[in-house]
Length: 257
Image (cartoon, helix red, strand yellow):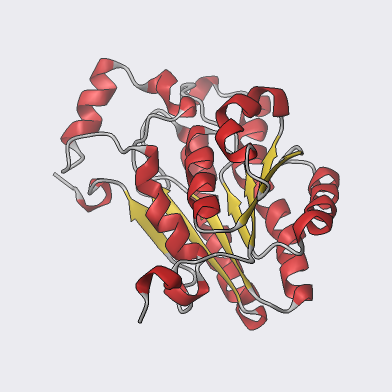
């Protein structure tokens, strides 16, 4: 068997929601490198263009503007992507937001904002693009991005942890819901990566605590998520994998005391 062809995504269209994030851009690069047309969906194109410039130099990548928490935006973007390169085959949802507000100081507005971006937007994206995949009849792969804080919950990030626990539930429920349509749904659970959204809570004491709980004793590099996302996107490589929560966390989830 030619193992390199197992991960070939030529002829596939991949939608990356939140492609302007550090991790989103790295994973989009991986899907693009394997031949997929990459639809880079961002809320603020001007802010994302610099980070995504290497991809946008290719005819197989295009930037699309859309708010991840707007069903109208997502439906419009889905139509635009379909007109550009055909019905999406792969959906990668990477949009997320974090906060270290102490529990008794969390406002309803903050709770709603984090839940909207981290959980509601996953539901909306899966409704929109999952429907398009099911109607197309070719199947597909939906990949969500959870967090090690989804269980057991991480201290100081109450709402974020709750929202990522919801992502796990959404992922496994939809794996059952979409299986008759040939659509696989899996989540990546990253450990601690130097992403923009978690830098605000990484004090020296916090870093020491994380390292003490991470057997590999280091942060992850964004490129270390690339192999996992390509594997999950490829029907030939992971065609019998659905409803799984795949840890890429340096051993964080294997630690107790």
